[in-house]
Image (tube, rainbow, N blue to C red; front, top):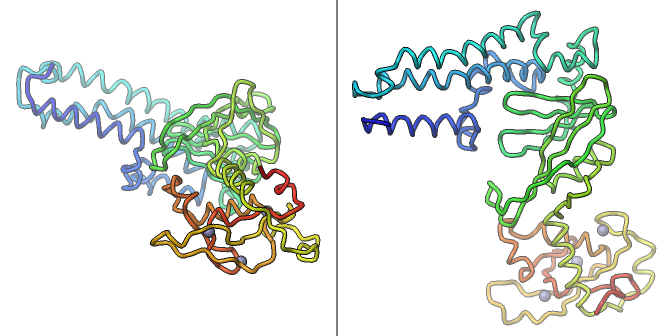
Length: 374
Ligand SMILES: [Zn+2]
Ligand SMILES: [Zn+2]
Ligand SMILES: [Zn+2]
């Protein structure tokens, strides 16, 4: 198809660059090569005026993306050095063709812009929540977005889910959907597993698509996409249970899986009996303030032979932690990018900082944990 090498190289280069721009690769985003960054003076900052920012951003994104084929053709004027090339012979026809998407998109955006953006899909959506003046709703959302308590969950660089006090917002390249939390129901609709994540953390990761179904008339349902490990956080922030479709099995988070392994190991350790009821004194775990303490750090291992590791010592603190909180503490002190080393590694007591390993975490006698020992 290509007679000249320069045209072939230019075409490949252009395809890669525009794909990276449209799909917002991490490199492009971190170097500011995004629509919202390049046109920041016109679009404004998201934090200052959330709704206005996204109305302008989506409109401009549509136009910028529609220009990609036309800019390619303009580039061929420089890159092409052969008169037999297809683009050279049909340049004007191709230009007309490439102008079509630009004309279509511009006319759509002009329609959106009329009456101070009142015809933009997001403004029309907000209009359903306040038929008198959509800008009141827009201001409410913008103010809530500035609040520190909002939850933001990113899924790659293309989609973002924001939960404020009253609203659930899904931000995508070309669209923004909102729904009032109290007036919507939520359901996990589908899930997909991936063997490794983009940020390089090992292990598999699961994504779920949650359908947000607004009860209000003429407000369409939409999807939000999050990592399964954020599911509990999202459910808490939404303040109502999220239903899960029958055929979907949520993957447990890495912490949940680690707690189970940790618990299994602790159950195999010697039971600790050298304490009195007064030591516990009806206390609750210092971590979760819910469970009774059920582990004690006592040196049981034989670690004198291991080089490059501090030796374990018995800590003198009274039993203060439940096994789950101890597991979470232990996990938080390990190198996050290398879970295979965790069980053979060491940690320090949360209070006195004495060194212990997993073999030194002993279940307290007469606790439920001690009864599970094998
Ligand atoms: Zn606890
Ligand atoms: Zn201690
Ligand atoms: Zn030890």
